Length: 385
Image (cartoon, rainbow, N blue to C red; front, side, top):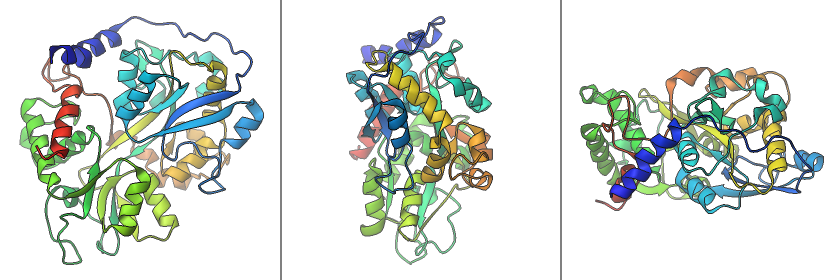
């Protein structure tokens, strides 16, 4: 256990306190012919799912770099894949990015080699989940909230609280929610429980869902054990979750806007909302493996991710927000200013973005429960312990 604690807290703290590190790549060479990317589902499209969503084909034609994608369903899976190696880039969320930096799995980025860097949203350029000691370890990709998806045939009015997935109740169709809701299959879901408690049990004194002392953490786990009695499946595969909404009677769950948009395109009776308690969210970053075999293609892709139709069309496709504000209005793709407003572009300050919990937090040194315990305890919750 002491070794795990060292890995989960001390090592992270030491790595993040290290001095400036120089970027490995100082100039681009000839494209190597391919780039291998670990990405969230729906993040890298070449028109195979829906022909109008394609930000890969033109890149491959212009750069000579074939894009190979490995889909990952959780941040822990992304970290594991990057630890194994063989990839050039990963679209890491904030609960993975600092672990990758601390584990020396990713390298500093030379922003001078990315012409469109200056176009990045100022709120993201120096974000703490990819910037350490003034050094950038990635290029912002996309951001957005975790939303509550619900079946509109069951909920005649949008639900106003996350209680529909945390507490047993009778729904609008006269049936219990037990066995008809889902929860995310990842330790970071503990933060969703903590955020719920921030609103409903202020006496716990939670100020951040990622910084929990022992009492606050216990309360979150107790709530998740209560939720365990309601959950039909802990989801991590976006497409399996969509099938569950279509065919398995699931009527409410936390999800990503991606699933909502796809189900709506199939005329399924779903909608989404950010309830009164607010939402956690993700701000994803393209990070480059420390041993990338295709660095030129990787840099070309990172530039493409900022300068092409990707920012615009991915925002429409995923229901997310671009990391380049100009993509909301410059007509490079399908996105409009109204679309950015709908996707919550102006709600940046209201979202509590995923980050890696550590023992040393604003409550004091060693005061908070570190991430390795989130991992083991959430496995226990799912297993009924």
